[in-house]
Image 1 (cartoon, rainbow, N blue to C red):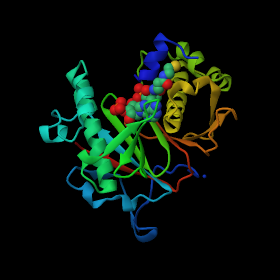
Image 2 (cartoon, rainbow, N blue to C red):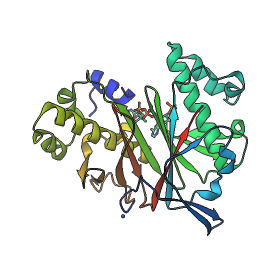
Image 3 (cartoon, helix red, strand yellow):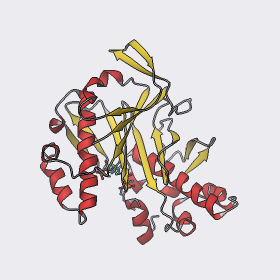
Image 4 (spheres, rainbow, N blue to C red):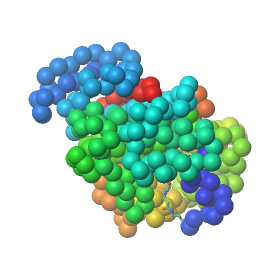
Length: 288
Ligand SMILES: CC(C)(COP(=O)(O)OP(=O)(O)OC[C@H]1O[C@@H](n2cnc3c(N)ncnc32)[C@H](O)[C@@H]1OP(=O)(O)O)[C@@H](O)C(=O)NCCC(=O)NCCS
């Protein structure tokens, strides 16, 4: 379960035109000019060997690339892979109590470096990140033009890459989470009304995770952590897969944020927040 939910359990704190997650084509841009368009029939499988073929030239300003990263690799990340990490990252990896968590985190971080490196055409180790006061990392070298957000839960990692602010969240649907007890601490009055209208405990739990991932994707996109209190903005559901954010003027950043549910594997719920309307979200799989 996420750090936020864990924190709340201990200390309650006070047209993406329709984000299209089933794109139909791959588009190759050279500069701003579209050169090539090919049908995309299923998500691409990218491995460290073949990502070089895709570069940042292919990420258009009105697109989001979504990478699914398997975090339970059959083996621990190899020495050359660990060699891609900075001293600070290696130190963080060494702080995990359980080896499984260390391997998952290291896999996610090495994948992050390798994937972003293909967009900026630089060696993965040379990438430099800086975090804001709430912990949101951003790329600062060799360029700060590429934006990203990462999320991981158990053995699933998701990475959103764009040229504008994005936020992403995935949660494993943990049956032990007491969503009814948590809801009043994290949901606005309007959201609580939606929860009350649910006809069954199952429906309530589904809605809880859907709203929760939307809210977390939004605050991750904004990069403001819980300094934006969770009860100070509301998710307004548009249809089964999309939602808007209703935020008081005092907390608004003026961006037209859009939210979409992402289809991921069973027992996980995921959401993507985009500060801009985009033409398409293109999905890839990264196998470590
Ligand atoms: C950011 C945050 C929402 C992540 O929650 P989570 O569900 O545990 O974690 P996720 O797996 O979804 O995301 C983790 C990744 O998000 C990124 N991230 C970290 N802080 C972030 C932030 N403030 N905004 C956006 N992204 C952030 C990192 O890439 C991180 O990956 P890493 O752990 O491998 O470095 C949570 O840590 C947070 O809110 N922090 C702010 C703390 C705060 O404001 N506290 C006030 C207490 S009242």
